[in-house]
Length: 179
Image (cartoon, rainbow, N blue to C red; front, side, top):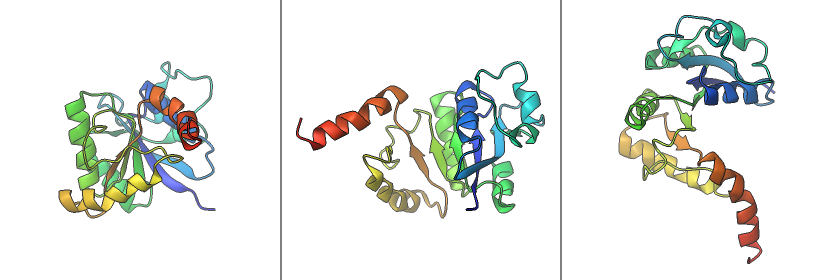
């Protein structure tokens, strides 16, 4: 099976490092685009996280050689998409909520789907908050999001807060059993 090429925004921060580690040797996804702050841009990923890698697990083969793009440069992700190196991005941006919201919307408007870990869009009415085991049907709002915003290919989906997410699967199972 050919892996889906993905990108990570905020790749050098703590949450971005978690994404990179979780995606290392993943059976479906391959990280082929990384973006972070301007101070990391232009460096190899290995150089950008040297002395700052926080995890016991490594970042996988190939990722260390990727050149970090400036996350504010949406066109670099568009170029990666056109080359077949970025079907969508996982967002782990560390900025103010307003900055994150604006930047994630810019990626989506440019045709890059965004799966966000940030809270900036969690209360945006047309942005689905997905837990695949519980509410995959919430993805049905994506065509409406695209239509309302004039986006052809891009979209934004978010994941819930990590604390809540860990409780939702057992709570959902209990609810289904009438408890």
